[in-house]
Length: 518
Image 1: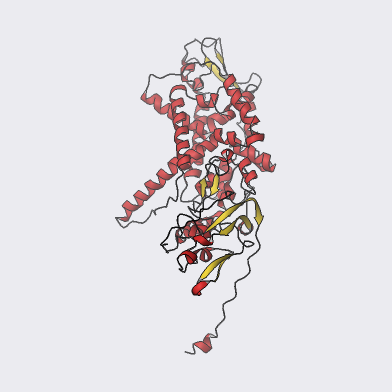
Image 2 (image 1 turned 120 degrees about the vertical axis):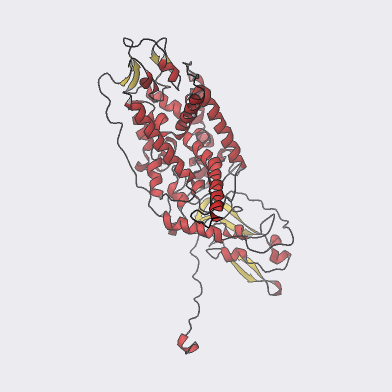
């Protein structure tokens, strides 16, 4: 059965690499229908989406449960990216320190079960906050988005600059609009914790802290196929215990705590007498399941994402430099949630902070929150209009959300969803304070909810028609006043529907033959 180890490694690498590409794909080469295939078997996002939408297309977590009943914690060994990351750290350390071995450790069931119970009981009180904080997929997404993605972009930009000096333009630089210090600190602490625990104790994180690991461990108690030691063939060499990353093999009693076993199959590979097998007494091991796919979401992204990325380069701050600082502070009462989130309550109760939407947003307007939604919304994405604005045509974040926190939207529907409303602070506007022409907010408003009306001394000043406003933030981003904007978006606690803006007055047609007889 040595082939099980090879199969497990290949499958885990496929999931790890493909999931990593989702978060690191800053040039947007992957179509959104690929996201569905890759994310289908991620347990927590699938479960949250199923509970929220009751969609039969979101049953990936049920498949994982079935696999656990059949084969044990194969999710932890093959699908979970955090698990593969820990394995990589452990393997590198073992190659450096060849004298390092694992050994059987006592159960910490009281600690594991306490975390699982507290996490489940906290859902009615604080939503998915603890789940998001401990979900391995979401943690992996935060680490890649906050740490490795910016590093990859900086490497890309350095390479682009080097090639440009030789007149090669096959790589183009990419802007980093904003970096969240809170997300970086959280990622560094989390990654350091994972590395330290992996170096000494292998899968200690999975068997002590991760509530999903504990849940799947409980299910694995009744697994049909289990790793077992044949007492007749075992010569008590103890090799199995030294390579067990879960430290769940007791070489003295020749017992395996299958609840903690992550099905890495190291013990089967390293047993010199083939005394360890993976089997059921009445059945032989067969297929490991079928390949499923889902097609709930449509492929809409290509054109819109490219247009969004290009337009984010084109919409720069208006080239008007205020001579005075604005004085009226902005007191935003409600944060603006992303398109498709329906409401703040729905979003904070279903978003697991995986940051997949943050990583794919072409304008980078989605940024991790700190306390904008309260403590339970820590690191959940928000619309940060100081960083950028939401492109009118783009719906990519709604297409790739794995939990259903963002409803899948068509572009024509998204154009009428009102995320928030515009508010004008006249005493901050340079038309009022400096008697200068501006109009940046009106110029960049895609729905013409902001228009310029006559004011003093032949000047024009903004007037807001919030019935047409969708809260995209283009006006706030374009406003040149500092430190406080003269126009800002106040989030709607529940998203509303904007009115269809009136058509522009048609341009007068010329009789070209009459005007240009030549």
